[in-house]
Image 1 (cartoon, rainbow, N blue to C red):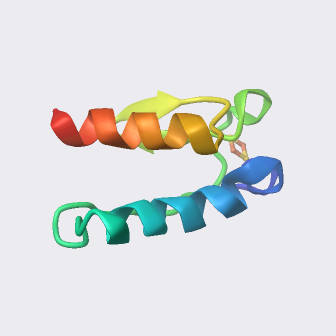
Image 2 (image 1 turned 180 degrees about the vertical axis):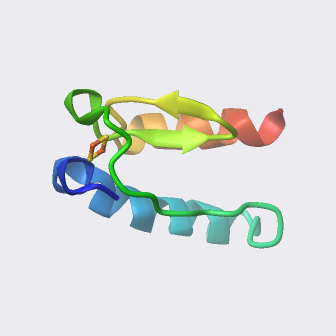
Image 3 (image 1 turned 135 degrees about the horizontal axis):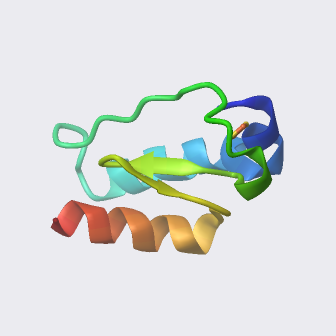
Length: 72
Ligand code: FES
């Protein structure tokens, strides 16, 4: 949720994550936390899932990332 990532699209990423979780009824098995700048602004927007950082997040890659991580 740092300003660079937020401006580059993570403002929508938050909404999309919430929607994906709700649609799949994952409210009780997924924890979402916003954090400040991770020092990777040039690679942003960034997303960290289960300790893995993903860069250049967009709506299409977001769905793939979350679905793959939930399978692990
Ligand atoms: S604002 Fe996202 S890494 Fe800096």
